[in-house]
Amino acid sequence: MADNADAETLARLLRTRRSVRDFTDREVPAELIAAILDDARWAPSWSNTQPYRIAVAGGALKDQLKEQLLARFDAATKLQAGGVLGKLAAFLTRSKALPDGDFDTRFEYPAELTPRRRATGFGLYASLGIARGDTAARHRQMRRNWEFFGAPVVLFVFVRRELGAYSVLDAGIFLQSLMLSAQARGLGTCAEGALGTWAGPVREAFEVPPNYKLLCGLALGWPSGHVVNAYNPGRAEVAEMLIPEKRS
Image (cartoon, rainbow, N blue to C red):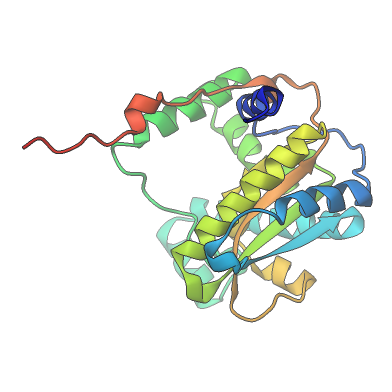
């Protein structure tokens, strides 16, 4: 019979985990990172292939990557302001502002999902005191993605190309396992799809095996007391997720 205490602990971790968007500068000991990864490696995967690889950056390497990624974000911002001609010039000169990620992080959300996405975004900005029309403040908050929200550690997740969507599925299970392990140890995390926009600096910093594609990043560290870390967008009820049977 299942231990109720275990079930209650798991339920609490699942319900209290948040995407942390402000970290302290307190370092995370290497042995703690190793323990979290050791937990996450037990995540299930297709035929136990474990088709993902993890790159971990802290200290000077993390700062180097932050500087390089921010430079690309800032250049991309100027590119957007330059209109069609600016984009054409960037393409012709092969500007580093152009995304070089293995997955396209820019896409249109389906109409069915857009209201939930917007509600989450508006709620997040409201918790930060950012008005809807405050473009400059929204830009500064977006830029924080490539600062890893001040986290002392950033992880980059790579998935095996040949397994397609199933390597991505397995990596998602791995990430959830890692995030819950971190949560259980008092650490915070923020999975960041935005960190897949530019792969160049990450590939230059690590010896990435052939046929592995950069999927996303993950900020890891000690949550600060900032109000943004208390933001809770909630979740859909189970009934909204269930697909009904066809009626004869």
